[in-house]
Length: 259
Image (cartoon, rainbow, N blue to C red):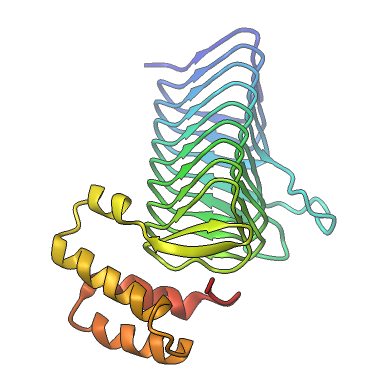
C-alpha cells in the first residue's frame, strides 16, 4: 500500500515516507524526515529536522515535531528527534530536537499519549506508555521513565527525572527528582502517597503492592536520613525485585529527591 499524500501537503523529495502513511492537507515534511509505516499525519502539521517517526504514530493538526531547540546556545548543529511507534500527538504538541551540548537527540518511546499543547523540550528522554495531559510541559534534559502520568498544566524543571509508574498531579511544578511509584502534587511538587491506582492497573500483586508501600514509608515516613533509607530499600530489593527500580533510580538521581 503506497502512501496517501494530500496534494496540498508539501513533502520534500528526499523525505523517506513508508508505505501506508497518510499526510493531510497543508502539512510540511522536511527533507531529513523519516516516517514509518502506518503513520497518520493530520493537516497543518510540521515535521522537520533530522526526525524519525516509527510505525503507527498519529499526529494531529498544528503539531510541530523536530524543529530547532529553544536554547540560545543552539547554533544550527545537526541534532535529532527519534520517536518510537504507536504514539498519539494531539493538537499543538511540540517536540524539539536535541542540542550539541547534551545528547544531541530528543527521544520518545512507544505507546505514549501527548494531549493538546503538551511540550517536550530539547534533549529529553521519554519512555513508553506515558500520558501527558493538556499543557504538560518539560524543560530541557528531562528524563521520564515508563508508565508516568503528568496531569494537566504540570511543569518539569530542566534535568529532572521522574521514575516509572509515578503520577504528577495537575498544576504541579517538579523541581527535583520524583522516585518510581510516587504520587507527587504541589508547587513545588511533594510526595503524597504511592500511585496505588496506577500500579494496580498494571497487574502488580497485593504482595508487591505491600512491598512498594513499605519502601515508600521507609523513604518518606520513617524519618531515617536519606542515605540510610536508600540502604534499607536496597537491601529489601534483593528479595523483592519490584523495588529494584527504586535502587536504579537512586543511582541516576542528581537533582536530589523530592522529600
